[in-house]
Amino acid sequence: MNWNLRPAHPGDAAAIKELVDLAYRVEDEFVIGNRTDEEDIPGLIARHTFLLAESPARDLEGAVFVRCAPPRGYFGMLAVHPVAQGHGLGALLVRAAERHCRDRKCTEMDLSVIHLREELTSWYSRLGYAECGTEPFAVPAKLRRPAHFILMTRSLVSQRSEETT
Image (cartoon, rainbow, N blue to C red; front, side, top):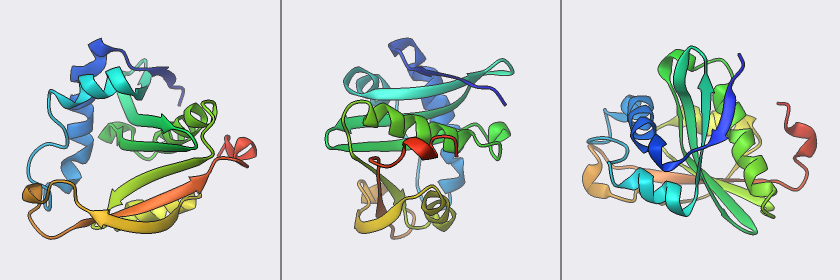
């Protein structure tokens, strides 16, 4: 599929929130409430970046939050609309986030994933990420059962040849 990738602007905040919350419904069995709230997204857009994927069939099919703080970059809230999942959009957004950070002099890319989503840890491993530690869940009151984050990282130094994957 062909997606148009672009950075978000403040007017995209409501659509990003809707997409993120929809994509993270799969976590309802262990996380209470929405993944984000109305106040989160505009502030993140103002201070950092969201990269968006649009297609002619649906205005917004994917989004990823990106923060650059050289030498490290970070991405999170990777969200792909359920109807667009399984077509490579998630990997495309990850590679776009990596390129965004590498272009801003980052040499490492980090992410965190809730340990209860084992399929994601495996998926990120296939994209070249390695586990490098853990940290507590940011808001334990939102949990239906105990959970923590798995921290993962990947070098961006030798990535240029891998961008097509």
